Image (cartoon, rainbow, N blue to C red; front, side, top):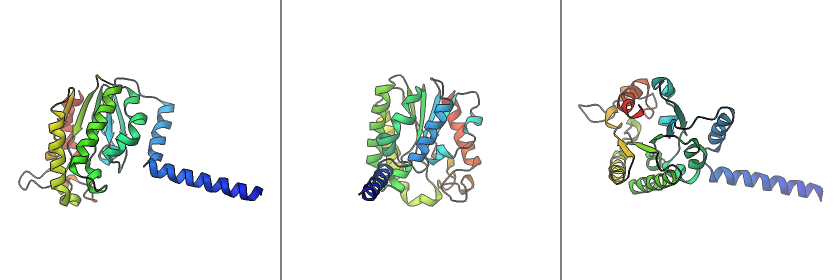
Length: 220
C-alpha cells in the first residue's frame, strides 16, 4: 500500500512538472533571472531590454551603453505571445523601468507558425499589460530583422513590422525603431551575411555595431 502511494505521488509529481514545463516555456531561464534578482535586484528607472535571442545573446550590451542602467532580460527562442502569457509579471514591469526596448515576434512566425496579424495582436496585449502597471514607461519596438537562414519568412516579417508600426502610431510613449534595414546589404536589400554568425540567424559583433548606432540616441 505504501509503495503504491509512493509511486502514485511520484507519478503525480512528474506529471505536474511536465505540465508546468509545457505551460511555461523556458522556465529555467526565468528562474535563473529571478535568482539573479534575489542577489542584486535592479534599481528602478532602469533601461530594460527584453525579447528573444537577439537580446539574450547580445553579450556586450551593457558595455556598449555603459553610461545607462541597462537591465538585460532576453529569453532565447521566446515568442512575443509568450511574453504576454508568461514572462511579463516576472521579468518586465517588476523592475519599474523608465524605458523598455523589445525585440520579439520573429520566432512567432518562423518557429511558432503564427501570422503577422497575431504578432501585432500579441504586441497590443503586451502593451496593455505593461501600461496598466507602468503608465509612464516608454516602449520601443525593435523591428523584426531578416536573416539569411529565414529568407522565406521575409514577407511575413515585413507585414508584421508594418502592422506593429501602424499600431504604435496610435499609442503614447511608444516608438518603432527600424533596426531591420541596418543589417541589409544596401545594394541587394537582402541580409548582409557578414553581419551574422555562422548559423546565419544571430547577429555577430559587426551586426550589433549597426544596432548600436541606431539605438544609442534612444537609450540616452
